[in-house]
Length: 473
Image (cartoon, rainbow, N blue to C red):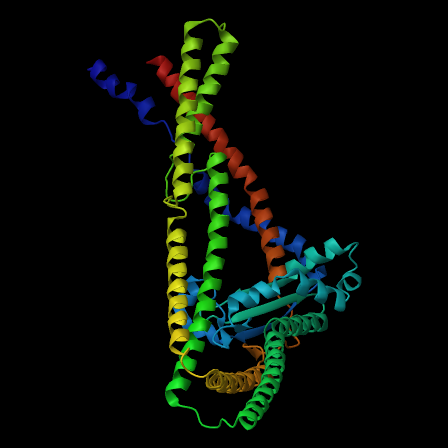
């Protein structure tokens, strides 16, 4: 009976071992004290928050014509600028910078605009900064911009003075307008000036050729010209122009081919794989470098007469010979024009030269057909064709000049300001609230020291009881 009665009591110590309370459970037990410490932190930080200078933010929102690109513009980082205005079939391009939020932010982040604003507003003196670097760091901290979901650009500037924040924002937008004007409006004006000069020269050429034709007709009594002869002369002139263009294109392609060939040869000689060949050369170079590294380690440990060293030297010689053969093979491909890096260029050069040769043959045949026509009639036809070509060029230049004039006169920044930089009337509560939140958290941390120590003691006691119980077992 006694043994039956005492057996349950032997199991009581292990059943009555208490587990330590969790840290958060202890914090809940001390919640009032933690709250008291947090309130004390708030009271301590309140005077500092009141002494902290209030900050004011002036902002403006800009919208752009490229915002219609929607999600695609968001994926490309704010979209791109609108396409450049094309004049003379693309010979003259008038860019439209600042027509997207992405490029506008690039202009705003440029050193030129930021330094101009800091210098004009005398921020170093206003902020009492020691040097220009400190001024720039403070400016970058105060100047912010962000792109919204609808591709609108919001620009903000924060300062302790509301009037200074507004003035700086106005200066930023003014410098942005000026930068866009220099990059977009000035090229339009330069294009207009160029076209006006070309138009004046073409007009003078037209009048000179017209007077020359009139004098020629009066001198030789030639006023009417056969349509067949005039058509042949016009065709001959067109063929000659196309031949000249093809020869110029062939020469340009040949120069590009020579430069590409030279670069390819340099790449091959320096161990760089040419385009389209994979890693045919670099593999040999890596093999040689590995063998040289292994050979250096072996020579550090073994003598030069050791069989392993001799074997490694032989492998190195074989690898160098294989590399030389591979380089020779690539150089032969380059010389023959069948290397992947230059084969396309070689084909284009040959094709362009063939077209130029075909046009030259066509010119020769047309000149032979005109050989039976009297020279005066041929000269008369040439003069009429030249006069007609000059008239068409004059019409084209006049149309393009008018287009450039309209572009230059109507060109303005492509964005529109929805909100002008207003004078902020309410300070930003964020700085003071952050300071108070920090003081409250510090108070909580200080108040949590006691429950943390108690939790550590309970953990140590639990481990000690567990060790004692395991020792008894």
